[in-house]
Length: 230
Image (cartoon, rainbow, N blue to C red; front, side):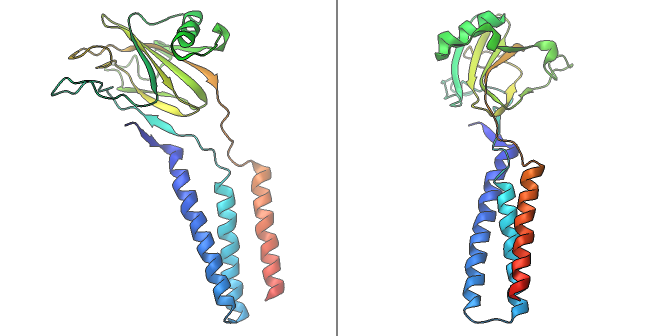
């Protein structure tokens, strides 16, 4: 299974902070029934407001992940040779010379995953544009940025082939070599020659200055209310 990292941790942190805020509200409400001194209630109310503002800020963070497909595709079991399940994001694996031009890539997408792309919808990156591809030795993975629905990776060599991945807006760390995607018991590692993305996906932006000021305004208004109550 591919790994998720990066902004994915945001979901866990946001959920934990939201739970903490809810529990703190209940705690302060319960203590209020016992008529604590105003100074104690003021201190706890301030903390509650700050936690709530933090929850609001985190809920505005972009929710994009980076999918780590590993350094090898590992399609076949090394011991038994049995075919294993590929990650669910992989929608097509086709042996043979990969499509090269934007028009060919668009047609390839349309034929294999039922899209309707034109050549103008394709953004292609050749090997010299792939970080780490021309290093000696080459890197084991390359990074695809967030913000795209579809990814096509072309591997070249005597057992060349193409893989189509549905990213749905996520980024990806993709194996630089084809092993062992196209041929059982293949020990060669044919490197990526190009990749292409298509179908831009809008990623929710991080908080801008206006959103941050609005959250600060809520916190300040809440503190002013606490002072009046004290």
